[in-house]
Image (cartoon, rainbow, N blue to C red; front, side):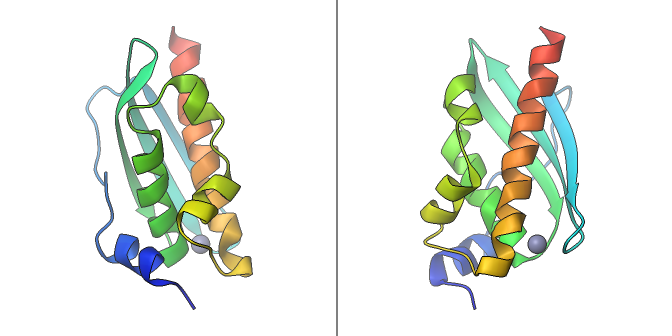
Length: 121
Ligand SMILES: [Zn+2]
């Protein structure tokens, strides 16, 4: 059902954890398969210098979180805001159609954490 790249990120996900006093924080959920996640951002000079997350989700949600956080780490806020679920799915080499919504949750979480950061500056 999942390709090798997805399974590799699922087995050894990157950037997992929590952050003390994050610059941006959001919690989102996906009702369809009960996935939830918390996203933490560290921002310096308009760049995302660190990103952590905790997710209670399916394989697709975990793999999407891992690769998406790799993709936005070190990028500017504008670049991170432009990331879409299509970019995440493409970077993963594809997800089963009924699992694409799990990558949308990750896109939503990054955008919501950025919105939280912007509301504080
Ligand atoms: Zn899911």
